[in-house]
Length: 246
Image (cartoon, rainbow, N blue to C red; front, side, top):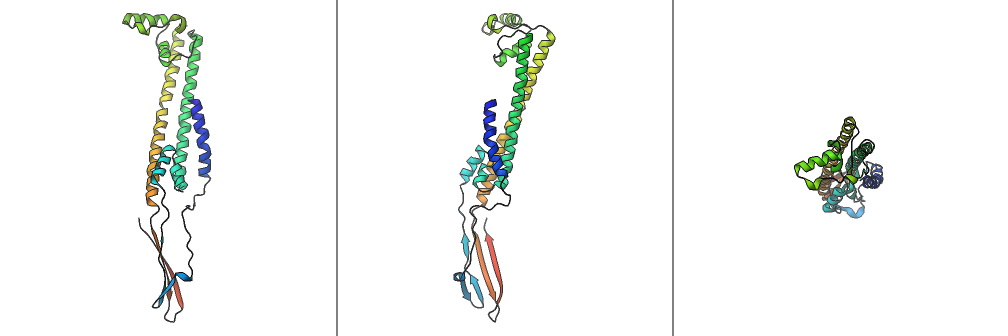
């Protein structure tokens, strides 16, 4: 778990650094600049009208933006040239991963300390046992008490081998200390569910946002320009009309 979280952290952080380094006043890659020349003019009565120009930027795939956002929040926005929005999803994702990793690392440390404590005060020879074993160690004073309880219940398959699973607490106080540490590590680890849920919700929110942005972009823009002349044929003004359909 620790190695996996470290790899994720190393992978995500360079992307975050690149995203936040971008200027908020971005210019989309599919933007176009219009140059007008004499060929665009035609005379009608006392006015000279410019021909209408329809601009249809190439619309990027909504499906690709969706998939990228689900894999890494903000990636779909990067694909759509909208990291001014995507950087927030990416930042939230990084915070959640850091919180998730921190909670699990802290819980593992407390659990390791508890196991080391049991090795000293209960004589456990192997601290690599599963969680059920250490749960029993925290509940019973010794392996003998545990085995006798299982024999009385008829649970013969649950009996431990004394030579491999031995423990015997030197005091009730130390057993209680161990059990308190073990339960504390479980409670801390369970809080990781909050960060895990936040990771999922953030991906869904990023995906919805990328879909909305993708569907809102690439619509036709109609540009109409007019040069207005007076009756004496002198230029009186210039008008530029922009119309965008959603």
